[in-house]
Amino acid sequence: MRLAVAAAAFLLAALPAHAVQVRDCDYAADVRSIAEPWEKNTRAFYDGNVRVALLDTGGEPVCCSVHLLILAPDKNDEMGGRFCKIVGDHDAMGFAGIDFARLTTRYDAGRGLLITFPYQLYVDGLSSRNGVARVRINLDRGTVSAE
Image 1 (tube, rainbow, N blue to C red):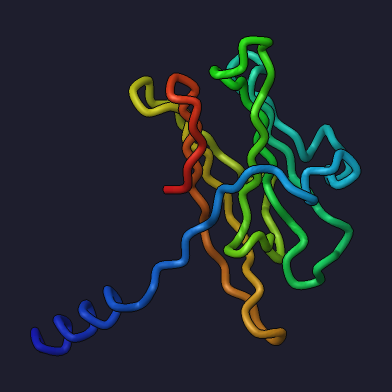
Image 2: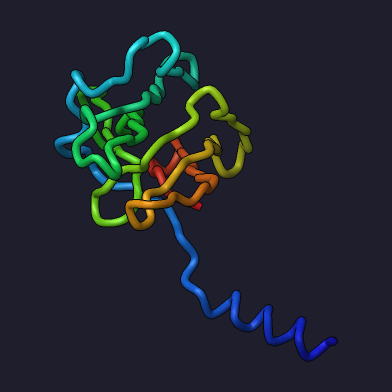
């Protein structure tokens, strides 16, 4: 029995873990892509300095048109501008869906704001896989990273 458990653990460790990708804003960050209604698909944190919005690029590409937009103060911009990041799947693709209503946050003074949200990932045209994304915003460092 122990051998079977050890073998299963080894196989699971060998499988690539699916992680979300954080990238600089691109075509998906068009204001027209903010999902309607805005009041249900946008949130503000840090006294309104950080904005998070659900994006849908109008069903294109069909498999993965949903992204998460993050706007935050850019500490390297002397004019007080913001940086723009998009959270999606690999290779600049989005997700099949994001349950924005179930987006949660937790703040850690040493690490920043952790945003967690459930998503659906396109697999093969016949099925999808569910997952939970974790994205950390650290304003002191000026970073947004997937965990």
